Figure 1 (cartoon, rainbow, N blue to C red):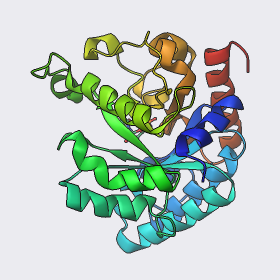
Figure 2: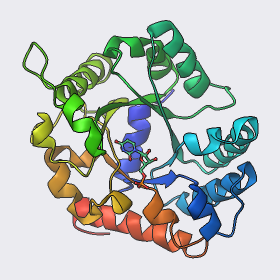
Figure 3: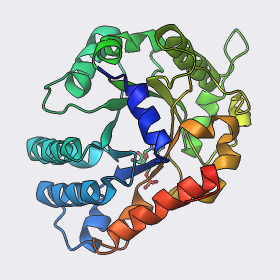
Length: 285
Ligand SMILES: O=c1ccn([C@@H]2O[C@H](COP(=O)(O)O)[C@@H](O)[C@H]2O)c(=O)[nH]1
């Protein structure tokens, strides 16, 4: 069983760093001529998967947009996930789960257990009940090729107060999440590999303000899921400057900026963003 980090490394080796967001907002569904319903969200999700296959490293369904339709939304999402698996795309379920350890373990089972109806390759997790509450996901990471993206420095402005707060040991909360993810990867993976536990770092931020040193290249490499490009204002062309020495393991997410403009032209927009992130990180497309 390949680790999630090894599967990410294969995407990076193919110069694929785009994470295509699947966020069926009601106004976007209207723009696409789709109903604001589970069926509409399913259509949009499956179209994004088709456009991203072979072009993006992963897709990131934002679960809230399916959850709002209850059981019909989850059934629609299951079909989107099945398409993505069939297309060979990595799936990052953006669920931002966190709870006491025993409850979190059930979330991990829902999103990471092989054969689960909602099985993804990785999930976003909220560590602010304590990094160790995430331990229930580690068996899936160790033995089933799954990954985690831990919220460290998020792209939204409201998070700054919490995530820049300084702990007793002098680390910001954001930096401590980066350190914990690195510690897990160091213990589990060879130094020259890509880790399976990554972090979420917003592309909208000056990471130094959060106590995060982007000049230090972690070994194993630390995967970075980077939302904030496009609609939230960060420019994909600036990715190398924003992420510096950790840019080689960045997954650049764009959601609304790819989805805006209707279903026609979607494939061209996905290709354009994929080329632009490759150009930004490697100086070529
Ligand atoms: O810090 C974070 C963590 C997650 N997100 C999610 O990413 C997408 C961004 O959508 P855009 O339309 O490209 O702005 C969305 O699903 C967020 O929930 C984030 O923005 N910031």
